[in-house]
Amino acid sequence: MDRQAWTKSFKKSIIPNFINKPYWEATGKMRVKLLRYPEDEKDRQTDGRKPIEEDLDSIIRNGFLGEIELKGWFDDLTNHFRGKVKEVTYIPVSQEEDEDVQDERKWHHKLKDKLKAGFAKAKSALGFKAVPKGFMDHMFIPWREVDIRFDEGGAHVRFDWQYDNSHRVGRQPQGIFSRMKSKISKEVGYGIFRLDALPDERDKPPEQEHEKHRADSTYQAMTYSRNIMSVMTLRMDTCVSTPPETKFRCILEQRPMSASESRLYFDPPYGNEKQGSWFTFLGTVGRLQLNFERVQDENGKENYEATPELSWCGGFSPCPFVVHEPFKAQFLHNLIVLEQSEQGLELARRDIFHFYPLFKDESGEEGVTNQNGFTDESSIAPKIKPDEHAIAEQQKAKELEEVKAQLGEHAKSEETCMKTMEDLTAEIAELRNSINQLKK
Image (cartoon, rainbow, N blue to C red; front, side, top):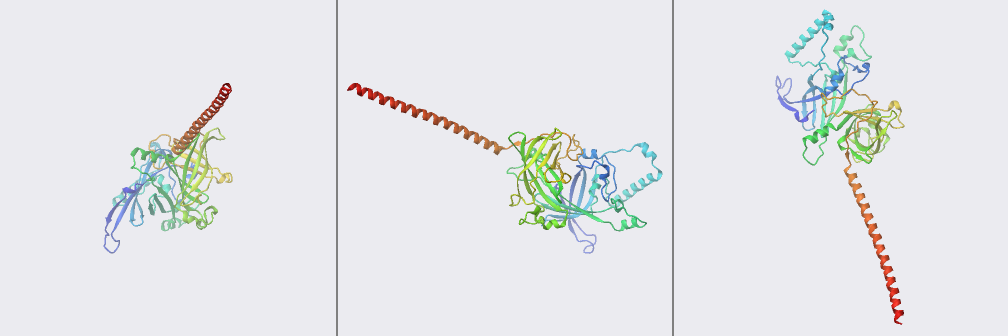
């Protein structure tokens, strides 16, 4: 979403002071791309949506294929938008059906397609926007209502939708009146997600090349662990390498969004008493410093282990809602995989987090594939900048050692000189004694 691309236009009511009051209508757009899908076809069924057959691999490789146009009311005082989806644009990946298959279809199937096309044209002529079917159907498009709360770092988004009761997983309606009931009253669900912006923390004007690098090196993930849904971010351009070359240090940002159990909202995070309840930390950012080291795993592949060092957030250190836990890490093309590896955590409860460069458009880029969890290959070594502070400290320590060595040499030279002077003084004294004896 480009926030600066939002516009406003004045809308008058059809019948003044009777139906709708005039207001300023805001219009904005979201772009959508597919990141990952389940390998098992049975798991690709979205509850309350009709199954759609598509070449999902092609969709992943083609980047941003969807666009959602939003229209509604924007409150300038609170940076709050509330509205509806007015149009959905979907660029389908070309899939031409075999002519033999077309000929084998029965006459009533062809008639149904013609009727659908006719209804679509009629709706378009009357001003109704048809919602295209595609991979965005798994996002529960069309949304019934959208609520967006903007802030400096991005926006929180809440949306709701109506289920298609004829496609509820394990809850298909039964009976002669089930179809009529599903048309009259539909169940409503809701979801939330976060739209983060690239951070604007710099002391000089942005440069185009630098901005592109920041966009390509910012990886984000929507995660769910320990009954908490969070947004996590790894900014690889801020990571620094530490000696030896197989080690580097990164900051893992964590922003809790919601809890799956209502009782958790009033509990302190993970039992940290006297530091606030869960609901007071939602939407805030905590940071966990991780040290990555390249190691060889049990399969002989070289990947990384990440160990926690320290955490902080909003005046707290350690941060109450950040768990100090280790991870197994794998760095692949346009993907970073973190797997929880805490010894006390059961294997079945260890979650895997997938981080993607969401600000990057990989359209047409080679190597973009569907990925679920770790692969049986070694990590691609990430390009990490050296820790300038550590290098400066090492240089200072080296210079100090050199100064100490020089001082030591000077001290030895001074000691040698003192000894030489003492020897000369003794020899002079002996000569004087000899001269006095000769005089006598």
